[in-house]
Length: 304
Image (cartoon, rainbow, N blue to C red):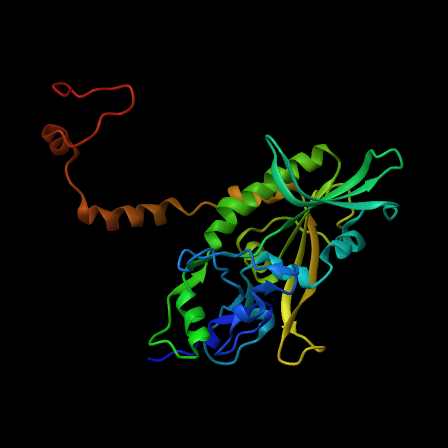
C-alpha cells in the first residue's frame, strides 16, 4: 500500500518535511548550529549529510506533535538557548557571576559530557559548575527510504519498518547517567540531562524512581530537563522545542529503580519453563553424545 513519506519524516534541516525537499540547495546547512549538518548515513556517498531532525512516532491518523514528533538529532535542541535555561532552572544558590561554557569535557575514568557551565573566578579557577548532557533517541530499522522519497517527490511502495530504540536508552544512556550522577554527588555538583519529553515519559513509566521539582536540593545530583516539539507561532506550519519538565533525582534512586524491579512470581517463571519443555531433551543423552560443552575449568573425558 502506498505511503506518504511526510507521515514518517517530521523535519529536514529544521523545517517541516515536504515532498520535493532539496537540502543540497543550502549546502546542507543546519540552521541551529549555522554549519553543515553533521549527521551521516552509510546509504549516502561521499560523506553527504543525512539531515533528518525528527520523525513521527504515530504514522497515521490524527497526530499531535507534542506527543508524536520526536527528536532524532541532538542538534535540534539548539533551536532554543537551553544552556541559559539550565542556569535559570538548575543552578543552586546565587546566580553565577562569570558563567563560561566548556564544550566536550573529557576525563579518563569518567567519559565525557557535552557541556560544562562553570562560574569562573577572577583568578581563572573554577568555582561552582553544572554538567549538561544532550540526548535525542536512536531508531531501530531505517527511515532512509522515506528521506529518499521526499527528495524524489514520490510516495513509498510500502511503509518502512522502524521504531524507537528504547533498549539503548537503558543499556547505554541511563547507565552512563547513573555513573556520572555518582561522580557529581562526590563533587557536590549536578549533571543535567536535556532529553525529549517522550523519552523521559518512557523512562518514568518503566522505572519508578524518586523525583522532585526541588532540583536545587543537595540530595539531587541528576536533573532531567525535557523538551517537546510544538507548533511554532512565529513560523506557521513549522515546529519549535518547548521546555516541559524540570525534575531531579539521585543516582542511587535511579539505579535502584532500574536495577531492582519487582521480581515476577516463581509460578509464572515455572509456567514459562513448562512451555519450553516441549523442546526438552534428556541431559544424560547429550552428555553421552558429547554435545554438552564443559564448564570453565572442567574437561570431558576423551575430548582434547
